[in-house]
Length: 248
Image (cartoon, rainbow, N blue to C red; front, side, top):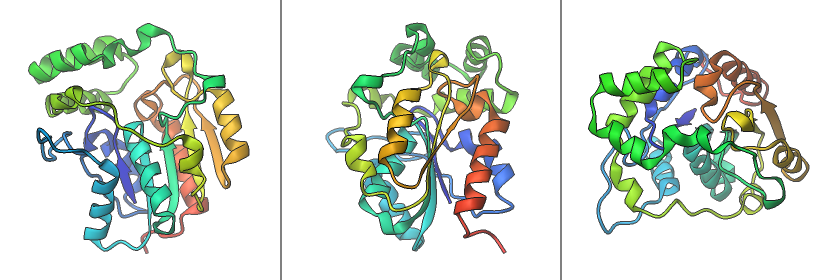
């Protein structure tokens, strides 16, 4: 099972979840390009995270796998799954940046203050103590493990990402039309920053075969940090019903 983190994050964002899943599944936690301990971006060269994932899976000799992604990681997982539906056993998309013009999420502008480029740049150039202090101030509900993962990842983020255009992807309908496997969409509250609106989720349920939707109350975009126990429960329940490739 491969777990893909979000933008400006690192594989450490999954450490707490992984400790609860590792007894049942073999887990792979890569750092996306320009994040964590991965290679840095190269000027003049394109970025294709889906292709990076395809090469990782091929290099490991995996025939089929389950994918869990958050935000940019979810988008990468979905793109790989659409191009390689026969290689995916189950797919979990945590607050994937998919939108429908007629049912956009109503997110207060101040919610994403901590994700603004100037804030990330300031944190990346500072020390861990400064990042932890900032995280504690803006995310007081998070436990210590979540704060450490979020803060530490900012120090290892390649700021060259901000000089590149956003990752391009096809529309969600085109991507999801290739899905042939159980898929779980996880979202939270739009007022707290979750990207998936209830209206979009209901529309997706009608149009994507084998799709399930789990909405976690009192959680924003960082679902696994805001509500780790609820997030884990939804992931475990879905996997136990839909992903039979377990240890033992």
